[in-house]
Image (cartoon, rainbow, N blue to C red):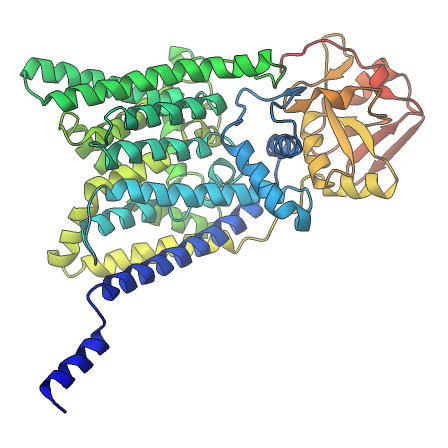
Length: 553
């Protein structure tokens, strides 16, 4: 064989210079897709281990109504958070794709929660990676792996916080997208493009959840003001950066205004009503108590709550997760030292957002138990992204040139995280809430009735819509009235529905429901007791006798 022939053969074996990088990119894409699929499956399994309450069930019903044409959710009362532009469109999409085969059910919440958490892991990893490029195990990949690793395995007891019904966790998804735009495209042209895009994202998100004021808008404005003041004092800074950062803050302020006005406009057009409960701070004397629950909630979010971990295996996993919590605190400390670096805006904003969220939660009235940590759930993806960004390169350098014992120690920690992920996925699925009630009602031919809130929406969804159970509450006079919280007002229209039963007792009953029922409707014709439930039945439409006036939850 000639020399030229051997060269052609070698060239054919190695591939052309353009196909090799393409092949590597395809291989990386397949590996990422496989990892995403595994994570989604594990999160879906863990979410399914906890039954869906009436809160999440109400969101399922709202999305179903939107999917069938009621885009403004006319006649609906939401909670104090509407999720109108975040989880509700997500749920409607899930229902559109899968409800034909699976029917209406609590599975929508579990699929949505797994999807949301998987997105959070990916977005936190991308934000941690930054603009670092290059193939192989480089700084960018190290940053991304640290961030994803910290979030990889939620503590089982935190399932209700981060892997169940909408409750602020999903609000971090569009916020992280906004941070990615700011971080990846600081020199975008035209210059107004990124501020406009960020403003639109924040306004859209605030329509759904005003917590974005604390998680994004206030931190961004505060950091920009501090950096601008420092820039003036130093008398430095490029004109482009002096214009760019204030424009982002201005867009955030405009977004806050638009996001506040939009729900009011929707209401004026006949759409849903949002309860404005407001956020209050606890008395100063309760702040030490709040600070303690803030610490426990922080550990819970990062899977490291060793104080409440049960059983023993959960405590073992929580101990492993202390490594992630320590990395987040370490990264936060390093980030605060970079507050005024010109190229570290996102780092400074993430640090400010974490501190503001932790502080606001510690002095709030939500610190009753560790589940209140849902009010600061965004600290999880923000902290993971910040830790990856600050410590990824250090971790890589330590693995390459550090003590020999470091690699085995890291392997043990990674094994602990993977064990926690598998432990969560191995939990048995929980039956739908009020499943015995659903079976009894459908078996006895009951289709429309009333119950306390925690036995209303959850029963409707668990039945796949075959039974409609509407929520009622007690007035000050001991009578029953519609409970206007995650409720469709049309469910109480006697020209559309004939409700002839009341669930007066069960796992989470309405207090004194039976006494109030007799006061409102008169003595029932029949009373049934089974599996801890009490069902009262009348031979009349109860909706005609409900007391009607607006009830504040």
